[in-house]
Amino acid sequence: MDLRVVNKLKKEKEMVNKINTNIPAYTLISYKRDKKRNPVGVVVATKNPATGDIHYGHALCRKGDRFTKARALAIALGRTDFNTYDTICKIPSLQNTLNRVKERAKKYFKNDFCHA
Image 1 (cartoon, rainbow, N blue to C red):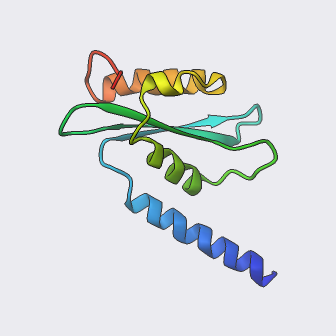
Image 2: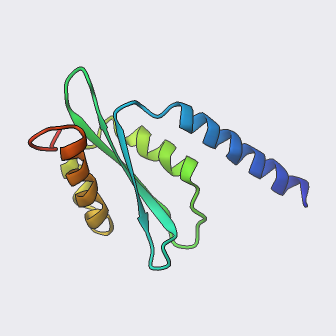
């Protein structure tokens, strides 16, 4: 195996371990999949326990790119600080996944509504 490939795999493994330890306690994760059931995106819902607000984050892979769960989670969790349901709702390719996350968030976070 080429040394560059080994180093790249090692960095990705380190990123996965780092992400798995930094996921907030009140978090829902749902992956968007293509027709072959391969993940191509992720939608994340987090709840701020102090305020009760629910924030959403997303990450989509461009066509031709390789999807990495750790990188997608890092991007989506970074976007939860300023995204609400209405912000992500404008992205057509995420409609079904976002609606599933919204319904799950209603049950998981025990709120009557999921708008932050």
